[in-house]
Image 1: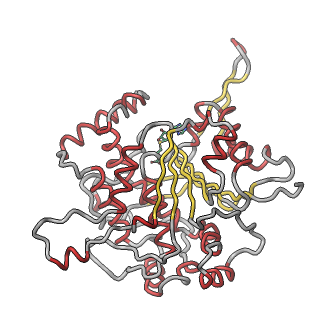
Image 2: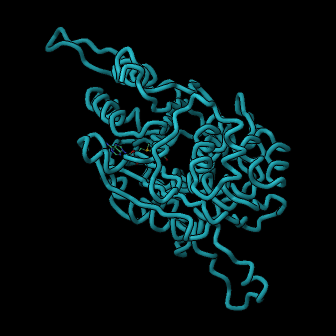
Image 3: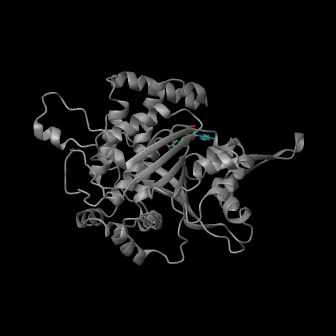
Length: 409
Ligand SMILES: C[S@@+](CC[C@H](N)C(=O)[O-])C[C@H]1O[C@@H](n2cnc3c(N)ncnc32)[C@H](O)[C@@H]1O
C-alpha cells in the first residue's frame, strides 16, 4: 500500500479552486429534504458537500486520532516512519503499531474522506441514493418524490430487513470510506440539514427516524482500533471543559446520532474469501466500494483479482452498485509464457475491470450496467478548511456499475 501521492497543497493559499469536471448537483434528492440544503448546495455548485460538513469530518479525524495528547512532533515522526516503510513496501512494518495506524489515518485518510464524500454526493451516485430512499419502509413522501426522477428501467434492489442503507468498503480499513459513507448517507436523509451555520462550529445532522446506515469496512490489515476510534468520534459529543456554559453543553451534539450508524470491521484477505464468505460479507449491501485498492489486488494477482470480481458478481444483489475509485492510469503487469520466452504484458486496470464485469461475467448477457466511467478527475480541497497538518487534493479514475438481471437468465 503506497501512501497517497502528494498533490502539492501544502500552501493552502496556492490551492486551485475546486473544479471537478461535469459536476452535477443533487437537486433530485435534496428536493426531498430541506429547502435550505437545496439552496446551499445549488449555490456552491462545485462543492458537493457543504463546507461545514467537510470541516466537521476533519474535526472528527482530529478527535479520533489526535485526541490522546500526543504532540504533533511525535505524530509527524510516526508519519515519517510509516512513509519510509511504505516506500520500501514493508507493509507489515508500516502498520506494526497502533500509533502508526493512527498517524496514517490522521495524515491521509482525512483528506481522502472529503474526496470520497464529494464522490458520494455527486450526481453520479444519485440513482443509488434514490434507490435507498425509495426502499425505506416509512418514507412514503421521499418515495413519491424520488420515483419522479428514477430511471424506471432500474431494477429494484433486494432489501435488508432493517431498511438501513448498507454499504461495504473493501480495503476501507483506514477509515476514509467509513467517515464519508456515514456522512453522505445521513446528510442525504436528513430532514433539517442545517447548512445556514457558518464558522468552525461543528455541524450536527438532524435525522429522520427512518434513516440508518450500516457500514462494513473490510481489510486485510487489522484496522479495527482505528475504525472503532473513528466511529466513537463520529457518534459522541466533543469533550467540553468542566467550565463550559450550560448552553454550550446543551448544544454539544454528536455529528451523527449513535442510533443511526452501525459500523463493522472485518479483517479479511478478500482474494482468499470463497463465495460463501463473500456472500456473508457483501450479500444484501446496496453499495460496495473499492477505493485505491483494486489495482493493488490486480498487481498481487490478475487471476485472483478476476476470480474475486466474478464471485462478487454472483453475490451482489440485483440493483446494487459497485463503485471503483483508483489512481488514474493504473496498470498491472502479467507474465505470459515461461523461462526465457516469458514476456510481460501491461494491462490498464480499467480494461481488466470492464473485461471481467462486462464481458466475462454473464458472457453475452452482461450482469452489470456501467453508469459512470471517467479516467481522470480531481477533488480539490477548499482552502478555508482547517486541519493541523497538510491535506491533499485527490486525482482519481472512477467507474460505477449496477448489478442487473442478465437478459439470458
Ligand atoms: C492504498 S490503501 C487504500 C486505503 C483506503 N481505501 C483509502 O483510500 O484511503 C489499500 C488498502 O487495501 C487493503 N488491502 C490490500 N490488499 C487487500 C486484500 N487482499 N484484501 C483486503 N484488503 C486489502 C490494504 O490493507 C489497504 O488498507
